[in-house]
Structure formats: C-alpha cells, structure tokens
Length: 247
Length: 368
Image (cartoon, rainbow over all chains, first blue to last red; front, top):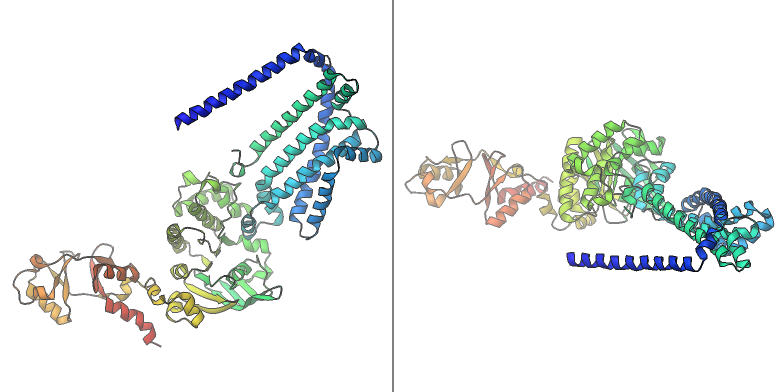
C-alpha cells in the first residue's frame, strides 16, 4: 500500500520534472528566436486589446447567461408538450451554423462594430448554457420533486429550493464551457470590426509576422485558461457540498 | 380524522380507484394493502391532493380537502415516500426543517425540535445534524425521512411504502422505532404497503384493495382470522393463523393465579396440589415469588423429602408481554407443552399451554 503510494508519488514527480523542463526549454527557444522581445514590443496594444477582448466576453457572456438559463428552465419545465422539443430543435439547428456565418449574418443586420460582435458571440455562447440548464434540471431525481410537492412547496419554491441547487453544478459546467469557447472565438469579432486580440492575430497573419500573431494568440489562450479556472472556482464554492462532486 | 366518501379516480378511461369509502380514526394506523396496481397508492395520494379525485369527497379533520388550498393542505400533512427524497443539497438539519421553514416557524425552535426528533430515532444529533444525505446509510436516511415528516407536528402522516427499500434486518428495527414514535406522538397514519407482515405489525386497521376496490377493512386479527373472500385469504397467506400469533400477547393466553410450591414444602404437598388441578408439574417459587424451578408429578408422588431438594431447573421462562409467536417458538425449541410466565421483575404470574393457545386462536371461529 505505502509502497504503491510512494511509487505513484515518484511517477508524479517525474512527470512534473519533464513538464518543467519542457516549459523551460520552450522559454529558452522563445528568447533565443527573438519572439519574446517581439511580443513585448506590443505590450501596450496587448493590454488595451485584452481589455476590449474581455469586455466583449463579459457582454456577450452575461447576455447568454441571462437568456440561456431562463430559456433552459422554460424548456425543461414546460407543461406544453411540444414547446420543449421545438425550442430544442431550433437551438440545435443554431449549433450547426458556423461561428463565422453567424457573425456575418449579424453584421448584415446590425452593421459593423461591437453590437453585431456581441450578438454573434452571445448566440454562440447561449447554446451550451441552455443545453446544460435543461440537462441539469432533467437530471434532478423525480422522487426529490415528489417529496417537495408532497411537503407543500409551490412550483416556484421547488425550482428555487430543489431543482436549481441540484442542477447548479451542471449549469455552471455549461457556463464554464461556453465562456472558454467565447474567449477563444472573440478574435473572429475583429473581422466585423468588433476589436479584441483578433486585431493582433489577423494583422500578424496578413503581415506574415509571427511575433505580432503570437502577441494576440498567446494572451487569448491565457485568458481562456484563466476564465476556465475562475468559473471552476465558482463551481467549487457556489455549489452546495452535498451535491458537489468536487468537494 | 380522515374520511373518504365514495372516492373515485379515473385515469384516461381506466378506473384506478373505484368508489372507495374509508374512515380512519384519530391516532390510528391504517395500512392500505394490496398487490401492485390495486389503487392503494392512488388512494393515499388523493388525501393530500397529489392526485385529484375524479369524484367523491375527502375530509381531513372535518374539513373538505377540496376546499383547502392544496399547498396549505400538504404542509399540514406529513409525507414519507419509499425513495426517501431527502434533498442532497441540504444538511440533515435543513432537510428536517423544510416544512417548518416553509411555514415560517421560528428557526431556533425548529432546529431544536429537529435535534429532539433525531434523538428519538436513535441518531445522535451531534453527529448527524450537519451531515449531508449522501453521508448517511439507507436506513439512516429513511429515519431522517420519517423525522422530516414529523417536524412541523402535523396531525396526519401519509407514508408510501416507507420501509420497502430497506434491508429486512434494518426494516424490523426501523418499524419498531416508528411504532415507539407513534406510541408517543399518536398521529393518524395512512400507510401504503404490499407486505402483509408489515401490515399486521403496524396497523390498527388494514384496508385490502383489489383492482381499485376496497375489499375488506378491518382489524389485522379479523383480516387474518376471517378473510372476506378467497382473494383476501390468498393474499394474507395459508399460514395466516400463525401470523395471528404475533398479534396476541402471552398474557392473553395465560392461566393466571397458578398453584405454587416453595423449597420448604414437602413433595407430598406438591403432589396434592397437582392432583387437585390435574397438573403433571408444578412451579417452585423463591421467597418473594420468583420462578425458581419445577417438580414433576411422577417425581413427587409417594416420595418423602422436600421440594427444594427434588426440583428441576425450568428450561425457559417467558415474559407475559412477549407475543405468542415467541412463546410457541420457545415451546417448539425446548419440546415443551407449557411455559412459566413471568413479569418484568421475574415474578411468576401464570403459565401458557399449547392447548390454551390453540383454544385462544380457535375462539374467534366458535363465536360465529
């Protein structure tokens, strides 16, 4: 028992060593090849555009959450038999449209600039949030709802006190996925004049300048990871201990 | 306390409950019994309007349930289900206090009550109040489920096969705990079950359902002794008279005021006492009346000496409050035709015989 634990610990340490070495090597290579100084040249742009980037994420993300969760609740709890599947079909159809096409379509209606970018991103982010809300609510065991009804909870109380707390983990998992996708898709918003780190990436591509491209790409990736960690923490602390598989 | 008048439920053309009339008195435990699909659960759920009756009236405590707001009605009736349905996002304490919280009762008061109730089902409040349901075993969870239904002190309790999913050993224990709780709290209970043994154990009255109809509504002993038709007879089982043994106490079959001898009596006295009564043995008691042993007739007749030197040990004695099932089991185990009965303090009170038990069980048939 102790031997195997020690072995596992040793294996763990070996892997950590390998990863550290790889990162260190990558750093040396980046420095030697002149990419780090190239990226650092755009520091001011990065900070400015990253802020713009996150504003787009925040706006489209909040819109998607505010619309997606109630819509999911509506679908999951609808007493009208065909409403749920109908909305579900429309949403599913929505997922098949490529992101770029959504942005393009938004642009033809709302014109160039932030509004159409926010709209396109919100539509994209809406889907996972809504689907996870539906899945989370549907996975609440029927006996819980029967017990709640039998004890005299109203429909609203059942939603707030029983269904949402028990579905919270899955709903937050949807938000986590959605926001990570959102951060990674924001660069496309540059194409319809929405701004964000895409400006560096696409300019870098056009000018065939890897430093410029990476100055956009690396912060985008870092932001996606950070957002994922942040929502993960939210998930850890917000979901009650009794229904939180992480605790 | 609860009265059903001609209650009928029709689901999409199929009659699930057919013109049922039923009355449950205050403090009684009424077990609705029958095979699956017989309408017993539907009948129970119509009482707190989880299912609305198609026709007929239901009264709880004199009020027509149709005239009461359904949420108010349900909060005034305790509800326990087989799947337990504890809320996994809430601690045991908060689970127990769901209804008091819904009713806006004082939080400190209801938390205190939760601890008391938990203690009554042998769960240490210090350990369990702050736990989550997933940290409890099935039996512990159902104890909390029962306690939760009692938290707001409702006069009426509905239980839908509450102990059906619990292993047989734990089920016996929980049933006993519930009976103790019920003896203290005197709720009016409607209890759905498909287990005749459970029904016999818990019920003041048993209602037997078949295909939506109430076939027989009577005390457990009458159901077992006089099943109304072959369906009920089959349902309660061919060993139904043996099941009645559980309902009767040793005291019911006991012959009281028995003859006794003491250690200092002569064998001659013992033989005379036995001859007077036509007995083949007699119990020897100690100075204060505790059962100490016994003397056989053939060992005493025409022999000199004292009882104290010639008595044999009693192979077993039985408490007068035990049920006859235990008594018969003891007789079979020790190959005896009679048992000495003692009270809680060990004092000799009388004896039961196989003949006496047979006679008692047969009495109900001779009367008719």
